[in-house]
Image 1 (cartoon, rainbow, N blue to C red):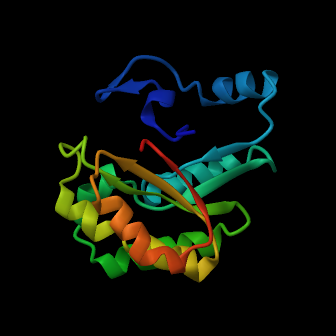
Image 2: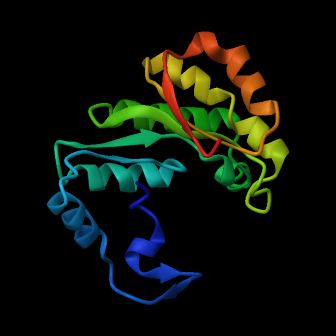
Length: 168
């Protein structure tokens, strides 16, 4: 789930329409029998927000990575790729009791208005190294990527044990 998203805080297109209803969403899910949640992060700040949400239950967990639609945003933050790797490494280490996967990461060519293909291709690869370093599965995203996604997976398959993929 993406409960870190501003929409749960009532913000749509930079305008506040309602009060934060994150706790209500969580409580509704729990009342319907959901007993575990995974908060998938799209960037470092999402990881921190997700971690804070995960503290609401011992059965709530998080991911840590850069979503392909956030790749250009990450690269425009005037940080090197190494700085992003170091930041995510630090967060995974700091929140290790709650981080259960590296990601959400991958490629998304249907939403190039968020991140251009070239930026996505720069950001995606280091996630494999993080998965290997921390022996974590990957939380993968692939949408309309032709052979690029599968080529990258195949060439890095030795770096991760397992994972889950969506939007393919």
